[in-house]
Length: 475
Image (tube, rainbow, N blue to C red; front, top):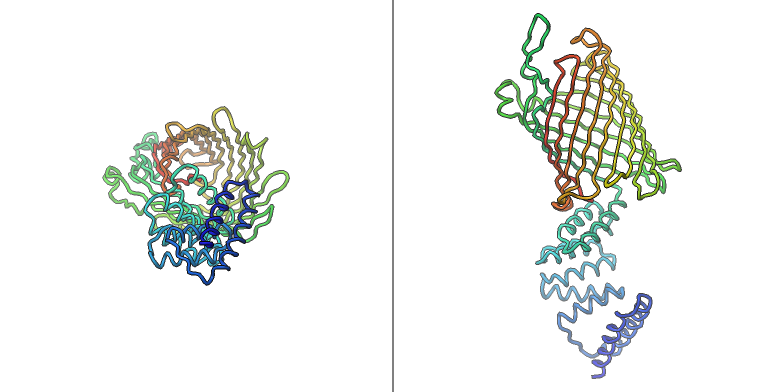
């Protein structure tokens, strides 16, 4: 009876302590823990019977007062009684993690996930697994489980917590990943000419079908993996690999007009390895990158290339303005494997400016490119400008952006004109990012684009309308 009274007194003290402010609560918990130890030491010789609910409650309290070993012993007894006891498995995961048994904590968390019956239980189990994996420094796996937690979050507050944890883990993960999947129906997959007849004055030549615009659907998968090899307060060095693959499926109309062409004739692959250094200075952040790569087209080697780039960006004003100003310098050497005379050296210069404007964000860019080659078809100078406006407030749940661009390409000589050649291009587009239609933190983005090229040589006049669908991360 005396033991029961003391236990009741401890329980009442614990209930009162839960209503104290943080500092008082910590002191009270310490006192109650000491009292519980004293009580338990006096009654070691006396049998004590607890119900499963009482055992679980005791285990949770032991976790709260940082006594994970005792909590783990209680939960293991419950799990031995019922291997699918979700609450016991979840508490065991946290107790094992607090005691430093991270592998065991991950195992208990995964078993809790399998035993979960509701979204809220799956959310809590996913968090437990992610925390155990992060403690093991398996941060990439932890990010996947946190995406599961986001998917199962029972309310917005829970979702925000999982996203916050995801960003925390990602910021400390030396490995970073990026993946993009896009599908785009188009009326001009091959950037073919819009004309069917080439007018050479007294002679009219039909344009071969493979040079004309061909319709169909393209699918593109691209991604990158990077490893941070050095990180300091104002510097980060990374090495990584980028890969891209594009496949084309010609429409029945395109196959009928050019029956000798196959889908594989338009396949494209590219693989690139890089070294990158980002460093912050008082005048902004500078990112330098060196890369080597190879591209293939139609199943055959297209080119080997090496690139050097230097990018500078500086924020403008305070964070509420969201303003940036940046510049990019680039050099590239491309060795063509299909036609050596088309090898080229490229110089690039780009400027960009962004600012919060009205009910959205404006981003403007200006780019210049000079390509030098022994081939008159490659040797040219490009100048382009682009303006994009992203609306701050969603429209029917979609985040909308609009853009427009103009470009001019100049050739010193073209065999199709007998002299200089000038092309004028323009593009327009609108995209809608459906962030409220997410799955595991990924949501679809739909874009409609139209671009046109006018040229002194009619053979190079073309236009394209395309609708693309791709997946983007929402956080």
